[in-house]
Image 1 (cartoon, rainbow, N blue to C red):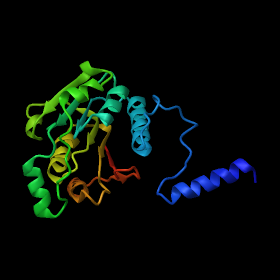
Image 2 (cartoon, helix red, strand yellow):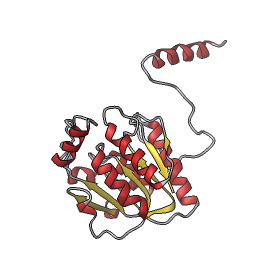
Image 3 (cartoon, helix red, strand yellow):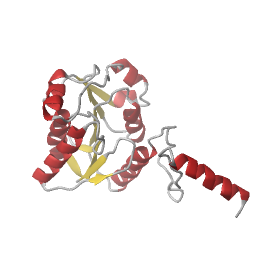
Image 4 (cartoon, rainbow, N blue to C red):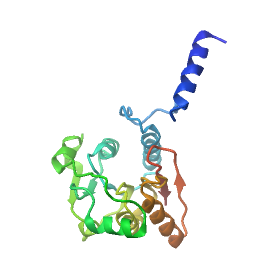
Length: 223
């Protein structure tokens, strides 16, 4: 065995002990654009593959994210779907008290994590195609009132049960065939309401979902 191979195996064992792993990427398939230096490779790479399927199948519709926070995932959406409108739904002030109340009463989470360190200006400053962005600031689903559109891709990253279940109820009927919804935190034990929302909605609609092993435990729903 070569010295380089031995060194690689030692490094791989050291990293795996910390829950980190070396793996090959899709080196036989060109990425739609260089991935950002982000530890959440699985989520970003899965998005890239879904984007390629959407484009190859000519799936119509625009793009949305519910739960934008500081806009890093939205930036990637804006980069990939450069010619489509990107709706940005967020309070831009952290969790709403009404949603937190549901979390606590249902035992889903404490709802105490602070996501208020963001702003519309910060998020928009990261967007490579800023004119394509439509900001929907405030309490969801009130911020979606009157929105008549279809979608090819939606990211639900609102963490809590109420906005996620409302997001599924709003966006799935408006999702084009061949489109995808990513629900972040599905497998995150710190936000059990996300999983509950997906299970309830999918059971009611008779549809399936696919969990992926990204850092937040995303579930992918397709149509």
